[in-house]
Image 1 (cartoon, rainbow, N blue to C red):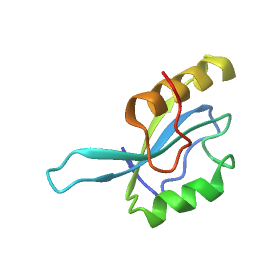
Image 2: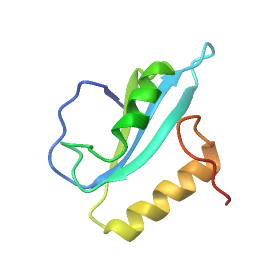
Image 3: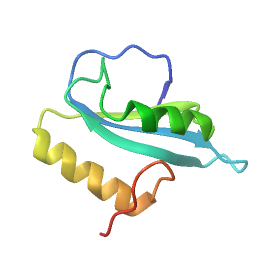
Image 4: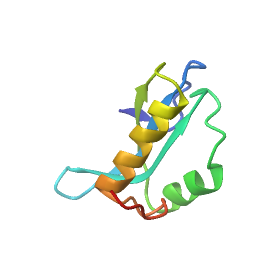
Length: 91
């Protein structure tokens, strides 16, 4: 878990914009994957939406397994958590 203004190395990975609920649980607001965590350019409009929804932190999983693996992880996380800023997906 990192602050939102954390500068990341230019490595591929998955990330989750989140906030904490009143009982201390992390609430995923937006899940995505990128080939470059330093830029995180994909989905910036939705990232802004996550900030409007109260995002305070970003959870990161660096992954060199390739885009297909990152997309599968992204899909699985969205199906599990149904973040408010992602389009709903079926499992």
